[in-house]
Image 1 (cartoon, rainbow, N blue to C red):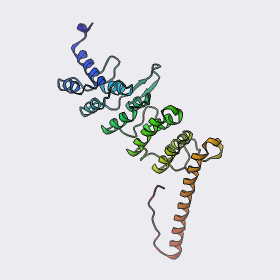
Image 2: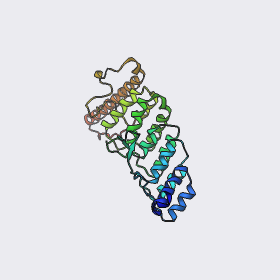
Image 3: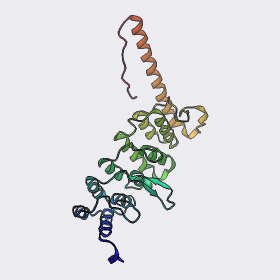
Image 4: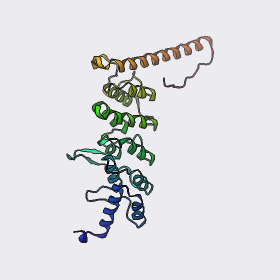
Length: 257
């Protein structure tokens, strides 16, 4: 069978194998020989997908091959189906999180290092931070992994340009996870509990009917809510006092609490 495979496809297969197995020198040699960095395999996927897939499954540490492929210009916006049902589509970071194993954090760090956009939205408008928070509240057994990925994404600036509706949804997912640390991270990053999500509901609305088990995380949210309200009242008083006294009206920079 091998003799009947066109040489171009044999070389592509070799590049995919080297990418999967972490053979950095072989990857470099094949790229130098002219094999396209995005040479597709039998199912139409590039070598960087093969490298991330094998890494996420724990078969090999592919930090080096991912970096070499990215430096050579590998496309980072590839998306494909995940799982045997072929109905769940995702990108490279979703692939890294699909198994949510011990390698997920390292894969996220490497992909962000080589230029994967930290707030890239997929075909259903989800960001990597959306996906990891949804996973964090749904799967207790991988909480350590998803907590680490959440911290990494926030440290790399995830959510810096998103609106408060998005923050509101993410804050609700964090409350569902009952994880005080993650809730605090989101509040510190800019989530404002006074704002509603796209359905018009705030985390602190009574119609959410949060159960008793959520009291610790909701106490933290209420504490931040009161602090924000107190700050706003102080700002309004300062402006009113300045206007009444004929002084220059002070300006305030938005400060995270």
